[in-house]
Length: 257
Image (cartoon, rainbow, N blue to C red; front, side, top):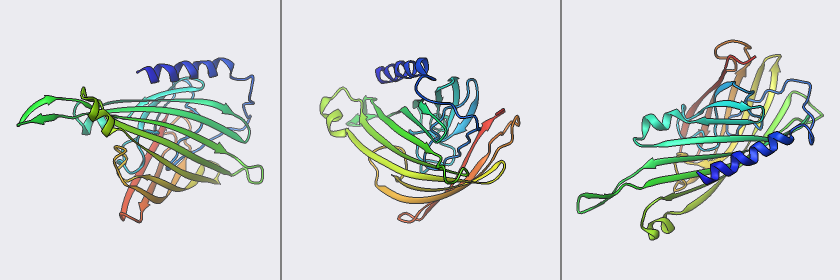
């Protein structure tokens, strides 16, 4: 909770000084990620069902965050699928857009997810500690001058997990961190249509740091439909050669203007 409060305070500070250190481009900027996240936040009171830093594409087709822009550069959300699949779980995600310009945007996001677990001795439950998963992601969008139809989005996510036990040794021995990274390259094929190609080095299941890291590739098609209920539907597929897993991707915004 202290980490969340600190992040929100920092995001508010950035929001207060927005406009003094960067230039908001006149052209509309649209980015549809596969393995990364957009370096821009949703407009204020805009809703979306989109990729989040705390759950990679290997988790499940539906482990996107239901997000909302609460300020021009601050976005909050939660992953509904975790509530449905894991009893006693809870999670939140916060993203702040720290810079935006004609060619370059960058953002940072923080996600915390807790899964309830049990510790038994001689068949009796002696403790119900949480498995705590915290993720910090840095995301960038780069639009090169040499081709206005191209957007590149490298990212890096630091994922740390531990068992929040009253036993200090359990906490120490359970603490582990992993680093995920990848790149999305989006190309605009029509006025309101895009293709995104992706490369990612991600956790195998995307649910904890205690997983093998695998490399995969993906592709997605996206379309902008202003003012429609599903305003920016994006469908895709992600393949991991090491495990031969194929996952389908789905995201959208709602009533985007």
